[in-house]
Length: 428
Image (cartoon, rainbow, N blue to C red; front, side, top):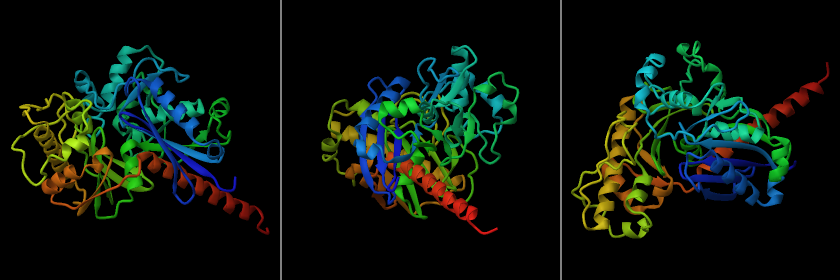
């Protein structure tokens, strides 16, 4: 294959997006589809992936050499040994406070897995609901397994909230005697080859049979990869949820709702709130928010103090599973209400950057923003007023970021092949 292409699949909160890149990282194809029934339904993940892969022009599909998947960090599914879902997934923003004492016994030191909003708490609920033996797989890992028809593996970043110790490359000591330890995946680093696509699926989707499946990352990390952030920039993802990310020279001290990932050999710290754009669509169903935003004067204060959460519970910048949203009083003016909600989101973002700095991340001097909210100029000006930082926007989709992981892995494999071939032809 002279000019191979790579595929990135992004499983977000509201739907699936794919991106195809060439070796120069040019975006050749990008398309998205929503989940008909919602994030909890793994059948919708498969349907979205299948539909979008088959939408790629057939000539480009047959040039694909590697692919990688990202997914919402913490959305957990129980499945059988052969990958069949045992029910709906538990979404990343679902807290399970009834299991917090059991979680504390397993994860005594705190960190991203210790919260009632972490995947250990969701795992305990799933184990109660379904008979064993079972497998516990996060969204991206389950789709990677579907592509290979092999659900053995999990990517390290997607499993931090399930207790994976990144520094020690192992599960916690307390996990060793758990009756459900065999339900956990075999962990592989982000960007490493997992296997090739299942032959039957390759034929069904019109893909090459030697297409490599590469360990991906979380959806927020994929967004960071596509942002090309400078050393002094922080990254804010304004999607259905609000996510803050910052490259650091070492792992951060663990804090509520925070985690440190290793992506492309670099430490990437951050936190994700339960607030975000989903609240805006909940409060303004069917309304054109871009048009409504034009009525806002971003240099003035709304005079309202709202806390725009999608439901009960917050995970970052504070770990508060019982925290209630504050969405009232609702003024008569929709524009004023939207103004107040955007200020509430900006206030959470401001507190989030303060929290990351407190935990040891370098304070950003500028911000780069991705996601749907990055296209709203009034929101950007409100954020600049709260954060006192310049902000630029990036329009590239997270699917392009996870495709870059696949491209890097492909290039490394080919470089190693060239080296090995040279050594085999060297005179003895």
